[in-house]
Every structure is written in structure tokens, then in C-alpha cells.
Image 1 (cartoon, rainbow, N blue to C red):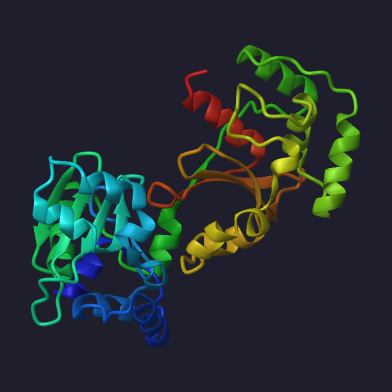
Image 2 (image 1 turned 135 degrees about the horizontal axis):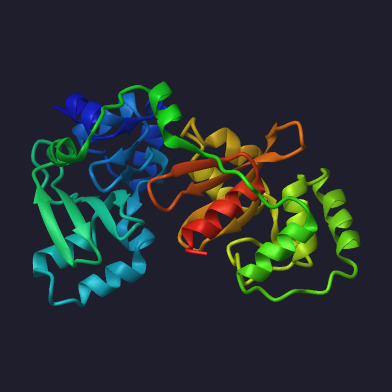
Length: 325
């Protein structure tokens, strides 16, 4: 039953190995239920689980709800909308997965064990609801059945996952030079900054990063005085941009077992975020004939989708269209 749910409920990743499972159990102070252990023998978590595109956590990121969701846990403990038994369960449960940008969790309750299996729950923080299942395998089968209603095609291999998780977007008529950037920003209502000293600051930052930044990003920084623009608040000011592995080591660590994005996070320049778990990245490992680095939007907080753009300019052009400008 677990194998069937694995194949049909979400996308598989390479297994963590028995030692990683044992280390997680030592850290948690419990032995994981058999069906969950069986999953980790073949895949270190799952992505795009069920119709709400959930993330079943890698074994190293399993943790108790009060430790990882303290605010939501305290709120639930005082919320009379929950059944008293559910309030108690949330306070002792193990979080094994997330869905819908983290507003819902999949839980296992160490109490009520039946043959080593723990009761499983879907906990929706926003809807303030709890749905119970007899165990992890039953929960996965339930999510698989729901997904059958929504799915248009099935993906069962890591290679297919890697291709399917990355969406390449392209567009024409992109801003390139400083004048075009300033015209675009003015059209979006952004204030026009003074540019004195920006080139000097930019060159100094390039020395610190030990690279020359790609042309469209460089000219954007020159057009905005290397500051955050009201038109694109998700893009950092120059001093805040840095190598992802250095500035967000926890992000790189959390996704290091997912082949489609881990190498990118290890080498990319992190230049912005949208405050909802989405990150804007530039990849020095993929440079075109004009010196442009491939751009990415990584939705780490929303099932880990990865949108690819041929340059920073292509990303911002698409972002301005998505925002209705």
C-alpha cells in the first residue's frame, strides 16, 4: 500500500539511507512508524503531494509541532473551534509535511499506536479543522485518490520530476540599457533616483562578490541607484544581494536532497524575495553570449516550483506583467 501511494501521491526523491533515518529517530526520541520508515527507504520525502501540492518533509526535517509551529500550536490549544482531543493531539504531534504555503500540516500522533502505526491527521490551520486517518499509509492513499481527480498526467521518476519542476518562460522586448530601465520604472510609478556614485558602489560590490554582474541586472541597479525600487520591492538593494549558500544557508540545506534545485541553490546569487517563501536567483553557471545569467523564481514556500527565465530582465518583465502593469 505504501509503495502504491508513493508512486501515485507525489514525486519521489533519492532515499536518505538507513543511517539518516536512525539519526532522526535518535533526535526525536522515538521510533518512526513502519509505513513512514518504508517510505524513507525509497524516497527522502515527496514533493507535489496531493491536489494541494504539499511537501512531505525529508527525514532530517521531521520535528514536533510545538517546536516548529509554536504560534499555531498555542493558538489551537486555546481555540474552542477544535475538539478537545484534537487540541491535545496538535500539542504532541510530529509534523511530517506541509501544504498550501504552510497553512496546513500533516501530522502523526505518537499516542494511539496500533501495531507500531501512529494515527495520521490533516490539520488545516486556516480552516481550523482536523481530519483523522488510521495511519500514514492511509493518509497517503487518501491524497493519491484526491489527486486522481485533478491529475492530467503521472510522473514517477526522478528524471521526469527534474524536467517537470522547472518551467522555462521567455519573452521579447526586454529592457536592457539604463535608459530603458528608467523608462520602465517611471511607467510603473517608481521615483527616479539620483545616480551619482552608483557605478563606484557597483564595482565595489562586484569585487566583494568576485564576479561581474550580468548586464540586465547591472543596468537595473544603475537605474535604481542600487536601491530597492517601489516598482519591484521583491528585489534587494545592492548590499543585500549575495550568494545563496552564504546569505540563506538554511534554505540551501533544507532543499539539498532535491536534485532539481539543490545545485542551483549552491551556486546562485540571491537577489530578492517576495516575503511568501519565493526567492529570486541568478545562475552564474548558465551564461549566454551576451553575458546574461539565467534567472529563476523559486517558490520554496509553495511546493518548490521553479520558474526559469533567460535573464534578470526577462524575470522582471514577466513580474511586471503578472502584477498587472
